Length: 116
Image 1 (cartoon, rainbow, N blue to C red):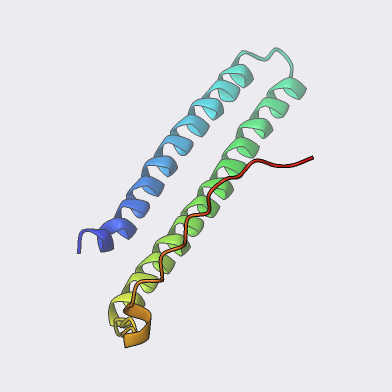
Image 2: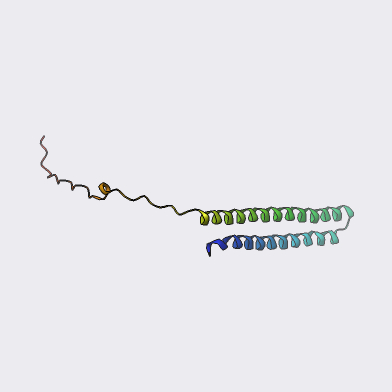
């Protein structure tokens, strides 16, 4: 059943990707918030704060889509493995007696000289 655990691996990889994506988004948000703190006028500060909010919204949406996609793949894989295990094994049909005979050996043809 080692192959059936692949859905767990898919989910773990998705969690790792989710964590790294959100960590990078938080770094970017902090960068924009730092720029907002250093801004000299209110227009630049508001723009940087809005960028920080937008970055987090887009990252959260991307992370959610990534997680849903991984869950769908893992569920699909688990379902297909479960169905494959439940399906009866396909048996090969037995060969007929006439099929088991060796084909007649071909006669060797001597190569002759060609005439012009």
